[in-house]
Amino acid sequence: MMDRSPADVQSDLKKGMSIFIDIVRRADKNDDGKLTLEEFKSYFSDGVLTPDELKQLFHAIDTHDTDNVDTDELCEYFSRHLGEYKNVLAALEELNLSILRAMDKTKKEYQESTHLEQFVTRFLLKETTNQLHSLQSSLECAMETTAEQTRQEKLGPTKPEVVSIQWSGRRSKRRSDRNYSLSPNTTLMAVLHPGAVDQDHHWTTQVTRLQKLIDRLEQKEIRLEPVEEEVVESKMHMVMVQRQMCVMEDQVEDFRVSLKLYVDTSCTQTGCLHMAVQRLANEARFILYEFWEHNNMWKKHVQNNYSKSFQRANVDFLETPEIITTMLLPASWWVLNNN
Image (tube, rainbow, N blue to C red):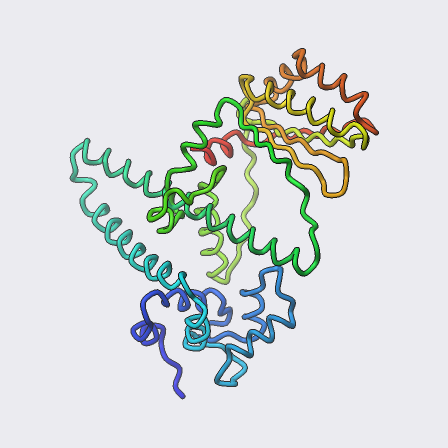
């Protein structure tokens, strides 16, 4: 049987199935148009299925018994299991075509447009990007949740317990409003069901960075570029603080009250970007993460009375002295991820 070109395969595909041409293209390391077992395992490995389970899946898809999987076989197998995702993939095809048409028109007409028309174009591009990002974030959360559920079924719970309080300080409402907007890889589901978009989706230029990395890797030539030194002002860095606290078993509830008061007060302070708390499963060990606009803000915060009161209270609550670690991060990371 002669191998068919991607164009021939695509012309025969049902709506929504063209994704599998792209899957084969990305997974096919030697560009022969089909996937070996090793290529299949490398691409489809998700950290949950074992190598043996991946091998069984490979042979279930390889209905031609050629020890290779091609696009037709992938389509045949997955088409039986798509369910509602058949409509999603079909909508994504239409969305991709619509975006390409819009980009082509923008390229041709933008320079000749009026100043106001150019503003509208930029605004629509930005909002489309926001919508797609929001959907991407929702899908990422769903992927992580389903993978974690499967791991827990197979191995038992291992993930730290997340304390059911989320503090975001004075920016909480603004961030919440932002997260309920659609974004650039939010996909069609967020457009059709905007209420389904979850909160706290911090997604932005990572998608672009990831795409660039994928493009470089697919060129099959990786060049290591020299690291360039960059001189920046100290205030161009935000500070992340990690505080680990091992609490005495009989003091956990009192510690929670003290911790909540500390976090609630801290979040109202100028310079506080975000706070989050985790408690490790089966342990009275809490990890508090604090993000501040820059180091001076953090130092000022530590000297405030509410902060000192929390530290004094911890003398009675903690089994061992708390461990504090700080790290400077580029402030632009926070700006990019929250605008």
